[in-house]
Length: 122
Image 1 (tube, one colour):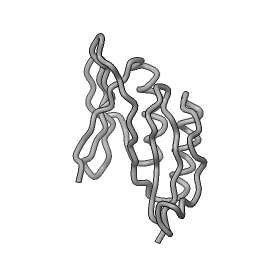
Image 2: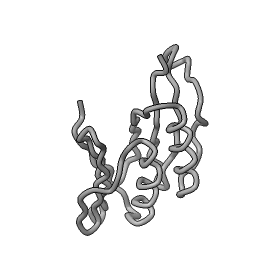
Image 3: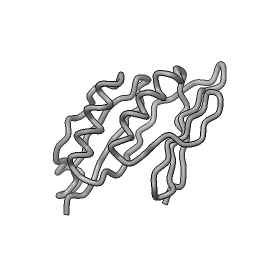
């Protein structure tokens, strides 16, 4: 089980707004913050930190998948991501090539990270 992870970004303000909106349907809310760093925490104790990359650091896009409670939350994640600067990388729907009960949506955040909300429907 993962307790926390950090996503390094170049445009902190834009990414903070994106993650606040996109992760809310998945049960994450703002937690601790420091200059250029914002935690988004879930009730299960897991968290995602968005942090400004150090000057000159390369930021390589990553793929992160978050478990959603239901298909409605997947759709809300997708819509919130698109409304807050993300781009579509896969509409909400079944992904039978990933598994018979895999349901997901994908959004590239404003800096190109592939963010996914998913669940197993059975």
